[in-house]
Length: 201
Image 1 (cartoon, rainbow, N blue to C red):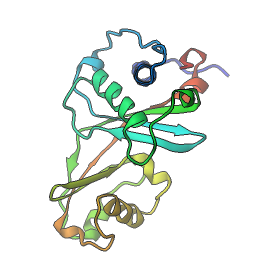
Image 2 (image 1 turned 180 degrees about the horizontal axis):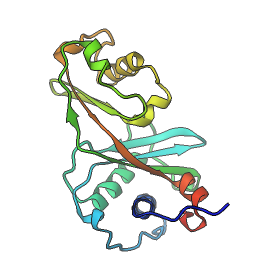
Image 3 (image 1 turned 90 degrees about the vertical axis):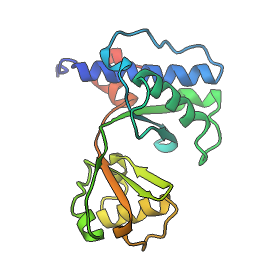
Image 4 (image 1 turned 45 degrees about the vertical axis):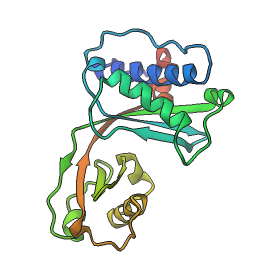
């Protein structure tokens, strides 16, 4: 069955995945994995990204930016290294582990702050599978990417778990919190390999 033609979005995803892997390889003292110079216009624009690492299907690290404050190329490379070496939930990635890690890059849209009176009102504005969510409580904040809906498909459970991630009790009323939603474009190495032989990163 013929593959659909590559799009500009596919091209950007391939570049970001290669850049993420190359940055990790370099940080771990491995030979640069081949992050080629690219003139894709999105790389020089400010962007907010998350880089997720999985090993044998299990999370191995995830670090990102919620606000677009630096060029996308720099943001992805920095977050990739942080996901591999500074996620406090995991020990730093070993150089011998890198080949077995699958990388996913998510590019975030501008967050949209939500107006709500209570938890029911907030839950009614969430779109499972589509929206990532950021919760703010004073100086605390936490986020779940849209991909987390795969593990927490119920909006009430999704919100309760996000409160816990922010260090808040699940029963904390939402009325005195702030929330913003966003969407992502995401690319994953395994999917890139499957869709096109030349995407083998």
